[in-house]
Image (cartoon, rainbow, N blue to C red):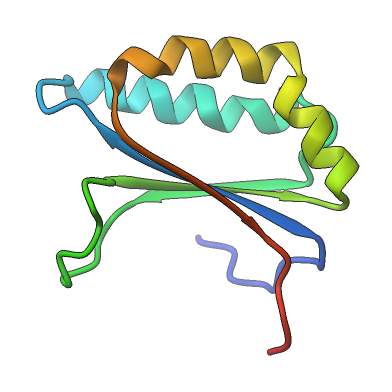
Length: 110
C-alpha cells in the first residue's frame, strides 16, 4: 500500500530522468533498485520515493521517471551529493540517461 502521509518539513531533491530509447526494461528496474538503495546507504537521506511518469499532458520533456529524496537540512543534502555511494550510482547511471533535470525546493504553505 502506498504511504500518502504528509512528509516532514525539510528539503526535497527531485531528480527527473529520461532513459535512452533502447534501454531494456530490466535495466530500468536495476536503476530503480540502485537509486532506492541509496536511502539505506546514505545516512543523511530522510526518505525516498519514485515512480514513472503517468501524466497524459505530454509535457514531460523526455523525462520518464521522477525520484524524490527528502533531507532535513541543506547540509544533509550536501553530504548526500558527495557521498561515495551516490557518486558511484551517478557515474553508473549516466550512460543510460537521455534527459536529466534536478531541482531542490523547500515546501511552502499548504
